[in-house]
Image 1 (tube, rainbow, N blue to C red):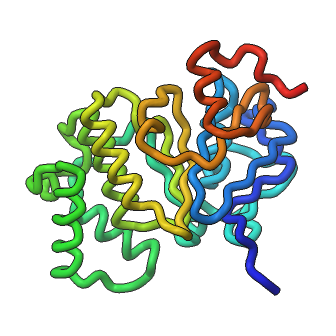
Image 2 (image 1 turned 180 degrees about the vertical axis):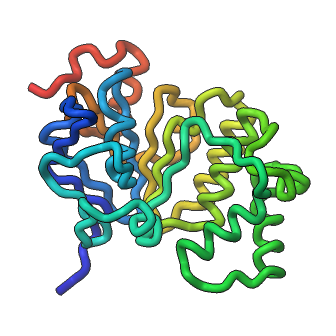
Length: 249
């Protein structure tokens, strides 16, 4: 049987947190090699959806299914999802005292791939990608995100994405708090990640980063489900008049 070209398939998903229904009847599909954008007002359920896809135990799946690369991962633990090729760039990356950025990424790669990491080649690759993101090489030896500016933390997240090379990268508000120059740099990093197999799901309020990236589909999440899916003209409509009138009819 031919392998599906769909990478992520969410079918009729219902999710609750502490007994409160957040998502209901949500459907979303992301194909291989595609860039999708998820937008919606505050409280619409964007973070709930992202955390559910990543397997956060606080979020309870009441119904529906999540398929990733043809496999049902609805009840899979978070570490198995990461090994399968899922990656989340956090909106507010945590500071991790005691472990350097370099060691964290090397350990993460081994945890995801299960293959020994050749130190010399790894260091060379890390230095190259840091240069592409305009990150000073001294950050590699510093504790992960400790004392990093907001922009450097976001670059650190993109660096992790490039080093781990997941099948699907979910970027949660990666462009928030960045100036125009930093957005351009991060966008270039995201563009280097893209190929015919890897996909992106970008959650954003600020659409600056989308000025530098191709977009295959835009999804509007409101009231716990996807209300509309369209092309990037939906972004222009939201920028002009917000989310009013975008509920499904």
